[in-house]
Picture 1 (cartoon, helix red, strand yellow):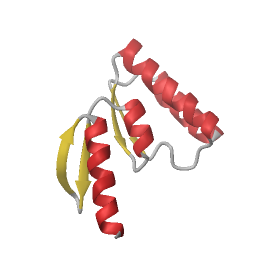
Picture 2 (picture 1 turned 180 degrees about the horizontal axis):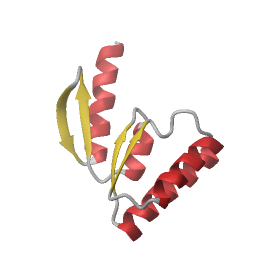
Picture 3 (picture 1 turned 120 degrees about the horizontal axis):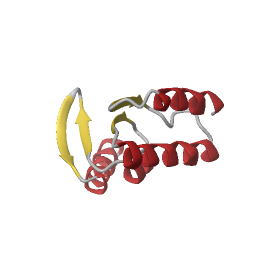
Picture 4 (picture 1 turned 180 degrees about the vertical axis):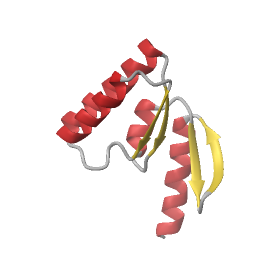
Length: 98
């Protein structure tokens, strides 16, 4: 968890216009998750940063993102509001898991 916070803090210190995060919630605890969410939301608002986030954590996507894309097999399936994309993702998971 601490390494995630440090890596994110280092990235944010450079104030990039675009930040790419790959599975940022992968191995972090709930306290660190909340810190990461606050940092992302604050930097998006205050620094007008754009984030490109790859994540299977649908709760995180709904809390942080303003647009989402569902991909399958390397292909784009749909782009839209996070809640809409998460709903579609869960429906597809249910069908595939049945």
